[in-house]
Structure formats: structure tokens, C-alpha cells
Length: 241
Ligand SMILES: [Zn+2]
Image (cartoon, rainbow, N blue to C red; front, top):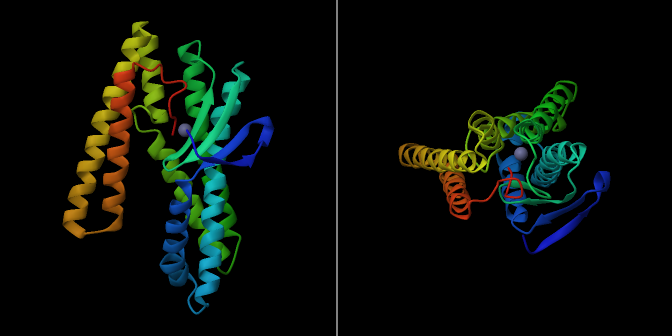
């Protein structure tokens, strides 16, 4: 993925971010500053809400990195060379060499990201309960967002992590790696269409921003799943949410 800027080398793994994260960070900062923060703690100046919102969105980016490091460290534990992590519009992308050698190791690598997000989400919610002022609603939002991220990425369609688990299970049952890739990619296409249609109904029904987001998410998911199907990619080096 081109046009990335470097963010360092945690645990020796090169991390960069694609330019597409910048508008998402700005949107999230604006969302936090306009709605949940003033509702939870009224009476502060807009500058304080925006500064807290910006900090919250940067911490969210860091927690996406935690998710990706989960995948990367699990892959490295199993002897893969992990070239790097790129954070982008839809989260992250971990780039290990080749595919996992067995269904069991494919499941371990796929599941490590959502597990890291679940742990981060629980940690943020716990810290939110112990905090006060604007820090408390920011941490609570980070907690629920990480739990939502973990749940979303576990949906059973490639290129999502749940799709990689499905792929590994079909691979294990049939012994046919290519067929497993096709099943996971088909499932990702159906999932994308279902999400986009749900988002469209939501948008028509209530006109909400969330409906539009769901349409975009479903559209991208279906697009990537179709591309994976067309390429016959093995999934391991393909985008991973
Ligand atoms: Zn993931």
C-alpha cells in the first residue's frame, strides 16, 4: 500500500499509516467533540472538547495498532517474518511472508487480533470506571469501540479475521486450501452486501450517519472479498482487518 508515513518500530515491527487514516481521525475527533463528550460533561469550552476528541481518536489509532500487533506477534511466534503493519481507512493490514502452514496456525494468527482488541476494550472500560471529568467518557468510548471492533472483525467473511477462521476451518475439514479460500471470499461478498443493504435501509429509514458508514463498510468488504476471489489469493498476505 503506497503513500504511508512511518510511525516507528514497536517490538521490531515496522509500522506505518496510510494517508486515509487522517480524515477518519478528524471525523472521529469531531464526532467526540460535538456529541458524547459535551453530553457527558457539559459546560467546557469547544477547544477542550476538540483537544480531548483529538486525543481520543489518536488513542483509538493506537488501539488499532494493538489489534494488528496481536496478529503480527502471533505470526512471528509461529516462525513467520512479519514485514510490517500498515494502518489504513479500514483498520490495519499485517504483512507476513507466505501463508500459515496449517489450519491451526492460521486460526491462531487470525484470532490474536480480536483477542487483543477485546483485552484493550476491557482495559479502557475498567480505566473509564476509575476516571473522572472528560477522561471517563473518552475511555468508555474507547472501550466500547474496541469491543465493537473485535466483534466486527470476527464476522465470518474474508478479508475479516472471522473469515480467516472460517477459511481455516473449511481447509481443515476438506483438506482443500483453495476451496477454503473461495468459501471465505464468497462469504465475505455476501456479508458485505448484507451490511451495505442494512446500512441503506437504515439510511432511508432514519437518515443517520451510522447508516452511511455501514453502506461504505459493506461496500469495501464486498469489493475486497470479490478481489480476493478473483485473484485466488491465499489470504495470508491479503488485507487483514
Ligand atoms: Zn484483525
